Structures are given as structure tokens and as C-alpha cells.
Length: 120
Length: 120
DNA sequence: CGGTATCCACACAGATACTG
DNA sequence: CAGTATCTGTGTGGATACCG
Image 1 (cartoon, chains in turn red, yellow, brown, green):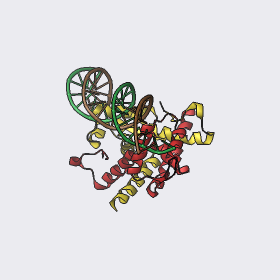
Image 2 (cartoon, rainbow over the protein chains, first blue to last red):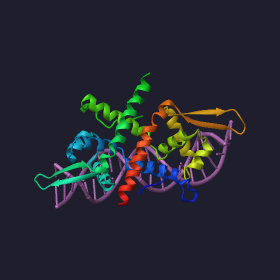
Image 3 (cartoon, helix red, strand yellow):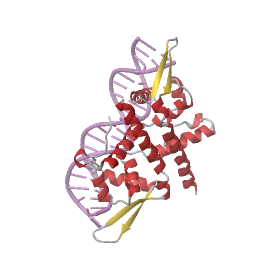
Image 4 (cartoon, protein in one colour):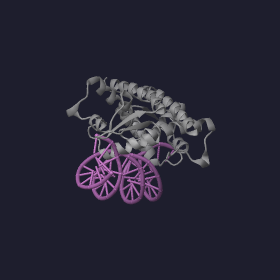
């Protein structure tokens, strides 16, 4: 999946390469207009497909399904299908997904600093 | 600039709204294939335009100029123009840009966890 | 050296209709 | 309810030529 943003012919030193690679992976995993918000909402409580469409006004069902699928494929969320009628599906974070919450938190912290800096 | 990913007609409670807004701002500011890497490289030392094209093999001059301009407009980096021949320009982080380094750091931490989880 | 300007290609998001 | 399929439009990145 990932584009690693460096050329295999001109590799930087290995410890630099690891930083580049780690950073780019996280960037790629979070790439998608709604993904950080999806992770954050799901961290608050297990969420259903329909509830997410209400929480994220403007998102279309197609793109919601696609981004949820990508998050699932990347191992950040898991879905539980309840065998009821009408159908019920719940999305929750995996352990790996939970470990991403510090990233979300510092992003929120910085966003507040950004807002403050623009209000001066 | 920012798309805030919520509908003004169906506003969530204010403290939730602030978290959404802060997160989305940071996401938007970092949106761009090379931006996190640019910030990280510039944090290591002041960088020149030509040096960045070497550090990021595959980037085109057009897109490098564009993403640097966006980072500058968002107040994350500043450029110093040295009045020499041949021309010399150096990009450095602003205070606001420095404050973004924790975000980069936790992204790198998580990227390493992701790699570990996939190697099992 | 450090950019702009222009054009092109594709990925991604959105709308809509349909389905198990 | 929770999706899938298809089509469409736009945003983003990339290549190239040119410029101060």
C-alpha cells in the first residue's frame, strides 16, 4: 500500500530511514477525509453504520463504507455483526487502534494552539 | 480553507464540536503527501529548496513549492532569503511549527508499533 | 538557485440507485 | 439496516518548460 517517499537507489542512513518510514505509514493509515474523526468517534463508544452517518453530516454511504473497510484492513477497527433483524453492526477499536489515540489527542491539542495563535 | 466536517444545522454539543474542529484543523494543515516529512526535515536543520528536492527523491519542484507555500501560509514555517549570488533561501520552523513536533513524534512512535504488529 | 506556469493523470470524495 | 455498484466531478500530485 504505502508510498514510502524515498528512493531505494538513494537510501538515507538507516535510523533516518526508519523515522521516514514510520511517519509515512501513520500518514497513509490516517489518509482520508473522515478517518481521524471516525477513529475518535468510535473510541468514545462502539458505533453503528447509521449512527456514523448521523455523526458525520455530509458523508456519503459509499465513502463511509470505503473508509471503514480501509481502517478494518489496516487493523485499526473491527466490526461485530449481530444476527438480528433488522441488521445490527458495531464498530470498535482494536488494540492497535487504541494505540492511535495519543496521535489523535496531540492533534487536538495542536489544533487548539493553532486556533489561539490565529485569534491574536 | 478548512472543511470542518460537521453541519452547521446540526451542531453537536460545544465541547464535542471543539474536539472535532481542532482535530480537523490539524488534519487539514498536514494534508499533503510530503508535508509531515517536510516539517520533520526542516526541524532537523534549516533546509534549502534544492536540498529538499534531494532529500525527497521523486518530489517535483512544482509540488514542493506549493506545499512549502501552504506551510508558510499556515504559519508553520518561515523562509529567509539571503541576498547573495547564486540565490540562497532557507526554510525554518516557526514557533507554531515547533509545537507540531510532538504530533510528528507520536506519529513515528505509532508507525513503529504498526510495523511490529504486522511482523508477527 | 529557486522558483512559476501549464498541462496531464489519477485518486478520492460525493450522489444515486439498487440489494441481501 | 448496512451496505454495494456505478458514474461523475474535483482536488492533488507529477512532468516539463520557462523565468528572474
